[in-house]
Image (cartoon, rainbow, N blue to C red; front, side, top):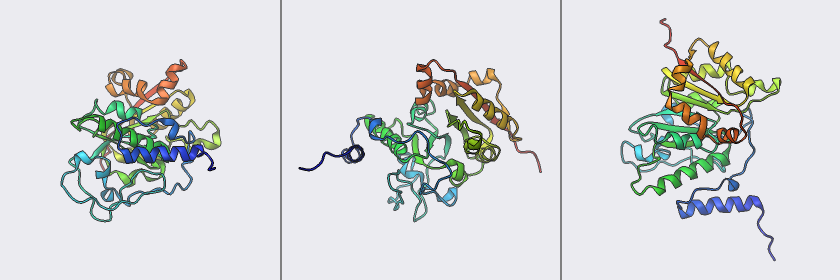
Length: 285
């Protein structure tokens, strides 16, 4: 008598069936379980473009393809999303990705921002393979639920390590907004080098953000909040957005309430610390 499938096999069977059936049912998190955090310094066998011009975004935003071409062959990693590094010139979109959610988790912010910014392409970047797969299946289900095929076409999710490869995906000044929501606090001092906000990484955010663009941060850890404020304010390319302007930003309200971590903090009656930083113009040479 054959043994009953273990939990790992059940999760794999569920995900494969979901893809084959093309169902409009929302994916269930219990079939996409993974550790809460991943080591950004490990080799995760990621696929990424050599330069932004080589990235084929048509896989993630098919409704925005500028011209009708045959699909290029794709390279994928085991258990990862269809990362598209084109073997032929990539398909062009009618517009560029402008908003990025770094460490997007299960995609709550992406889904909530989609109708708020319907004419903007938003991308979630997540290092954990199964969490990325969940977000992608969630987006597919949301799109399938819309008979007119118009809703949620402007959001996508890719597996990526932004601490290493962010400039490989985006040109200088391409982005208008970056969200950093409830990042791993890395409490131990020897782990601070793994924090998603640092002097070096802030220079990369400054590179991909256009002047006037905003970096949004939120956390429930006050020490991490102070760290992020300190490092952004110390960077010559950023200035902190005044609280009056911050509170008037519609994206802040969404960021406070729609992420999975934000909802957990709400249930536990925790505090949320928010800070926004504006990309300044580069000084004249």
